[in-house]
Amino acid sequence: MSPTEWGGPKIPAVDRLPGLRVPAWLQALGRGAWLLVGIAVLLAIAFFLLGLVSDLVIPLVFAAILAAIFVPLVDRLERWAVPRWLGAPLVVLLVIGVVLVVAWMVVAGLVGQGREILAQATAGLEEAGSLPGMAAPDTDQAIRTLGELVRTLVSGLVSGLSSVTVLIVGIVTGLFILLFLMKDWRLVVDGAADQIAAVLGLPDRVGRQIVFDTVHSFRGYAWGLTIVGLMNGAVVGLGALLLGSRWPGRSPS
Image 1 (cartoon, rainbow, N blue to C red):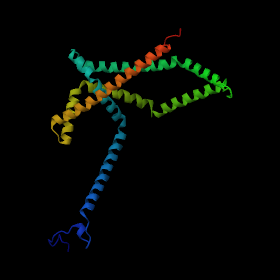
Image 2 (tube, one colour; image 1 turned 45 degrees about the vertical axis):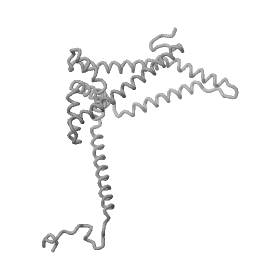
Image 3 (tube, rainbow, N blue to C red; image 1 turned 30 degrees about the vertical axis):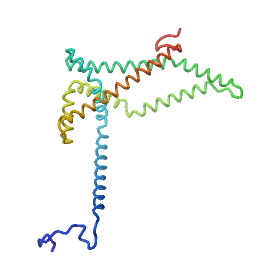
């Protein structure tokens, strides 16, 4: 007959074996170890689920960051009597235009200077071959090797993208998410602050302060990168002007 059947007191599991006493510190250590195991399992499950929906999570994260940075432009347009449903698409188009202009400047610069870079490299190889004690390098072979290296680099970069279709879908999805986030930014921020406050058991004002500080940090980081980029562009442009480099699309004089 068990103790529960005859109404006797329950014996703890650690006391059922005579002479076995588990110290309190060891019990606490065991509980902590199982807690760490549970946290690791939960994190593994969370990362697994994020991997399944990564095609949506990654555009959402980038759209949220961009919305936090560019939503002041939508607010400014709203103060100028431009409704948010119109201001948000205008800002998105502005961002796309800036990206396309920068990409065109980079690509046009590389293409425009391609022949000049190749000529400089060929002249350097020929000059190296004319030095005493050095054999003349095979210029054609060096150029072919350089071309193969560039093709390998480009093919590796393209193959790193899982699929062009997935990339296009991700970009389009991110743009739509960015559009709706900037249009309904206040509702999104208020909802996120309320959820943070409810989950952490904090007052509503604390949740709002957390969201505000996070958004402010992203904007400050973006402003810092912009200032550094402008300074670097000014230095590079001044150096190119002093060296007499030609601009993309401009024929050499």
